[in-house]
Amino acid sequence: QYRRCYSTRPPSVSLLGKEYPTDKTTNITSAIADKVGRNLYMNPSHPLGILHALVSSHFRDFNSMVGLPPVVTPAQNFDDLSFPPDHPGRAVTDSYYLNDSAMLRTHTSAHEVETFARGERRWLLSADVYRRDEIDASHYPVFHQMEGARVFASGAEGRAELEADNARLAGELARARIAIEDVPHVSPTNPAQAAHDPVLAELVAQNLKLSLNSLMLSLFGDHAGGEAGEPLRVRWIEAFFPFTTPSYEVEVFFRGKWLEILGCGVVQQQTLDRANVPNSISWAFGLGLERIAMILFSIPDIRLFWSQDPRFLSQFTAGQISTFKPYSKYPACYKDVSFWLSEAGLHDNDFCDLVRDTAGDLVQDVVLIDDFTHPKTKRSSKCYRINYCSMDRSLSNEEANEVHAQVIASLKDKFGVEIR
Ligand code: FA5
Ligand code: MG
Image (tube, rainbow, N blue to C red; front, top):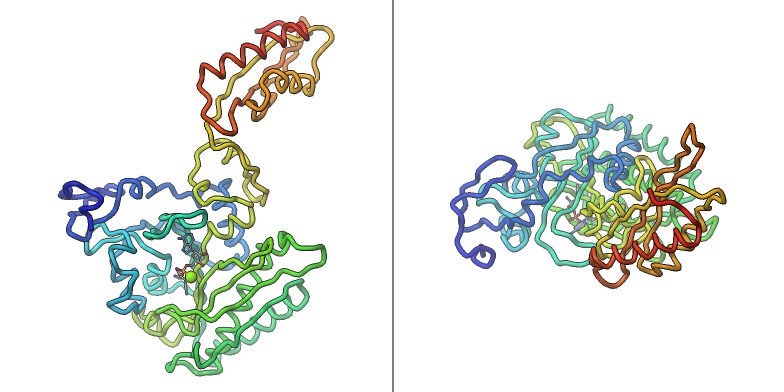
């Protein structure tokens, strides 16, 4: 397998300052290794960071964990979660391996056992995950997931807590504008676990559904994009995961399409047993941050999340959902012009018209970056930053300089300004 990626296998690969001896399973590429450690979701004004904060604040009494290193053992990623030995996810064609005992996690569920083992009862865990997958606008080999889980006592105490919490959540949702297409909590094709009291298992499944419907409402309720008065539409579907049963997937109807947002279910008792958590029952979910952020921010291509272009990053503000405005995929070329105004002055719009007249569609945007009046002479000066960028080709710096020189010449000519 590695022979297709490397002409000779290096004796070891290094990641996050650690050396891993290679073997025949090694298939991590440098393009993937370069993404490790970017931690996009930790930037509070990146769309993934904004979404991460929204989900954390919705589950405000959950302990929200970040920053766990992405290298795990196949045991953590698969065996601890009861994946069968022949599961296709284990193949080198589906996952990235450093060697046969170290891999990049393919999902945040890889940290379930260690987190339950620490005694966490309500927790969130966000991280970068890695999969060898198809390439298109909504699939990328690195993406981000947020895992959430809640543990209840399995006796009468847990039952009372669940009944109270379910009544509270159901009351909130009954007042909200949300239309839910449901499936039975438990069915022959989506059974409860033999180890569980059937009544308790249903209460846990119901609590999971109510908790996630409430999350969908706080994320999408104001952004459903439908006709005024139209409720948010959420659809529950039976699913299968080796580490939960019953299991579900949740889809949200947004701008005319059903989108898969998350997978979830009642945690397999073996997982809690491996974590040494006795007398307990738990639900868990794993949501895809990119999928949700693409919807909320109207981001059309998953590659944009990795952009370091200020035209992307500057569009987002911590704590705010905003609509992304697409820009040219060709590089921007910024040129500044600063000048003293004549007595007649110069309105921003006059300046923009002049630039538009001279540079045509090569200009993408114009920003006033300085506006200054000299305290003694009372003369005013302005500085504008012009972004020259073609919609359909790469503009050379020489070409941008030429156009910029024409802008300056007509500025002097039409408005009698003095260039600084
Ligand atoms: C999982 O990864 C499970 N670990 C989720 C889970 C957690 C189930 C806890 C039960 C309990 P899945 O492979 O379906 O499931 O991925 C979950 C979400 O990640 C998907 O709904 C989708 O939103 C997102 N996702 C999956 N693959 C990609 C991809 N290649 N690019 C972007 N997002 C993806
Ligand atoms: Mg899925």
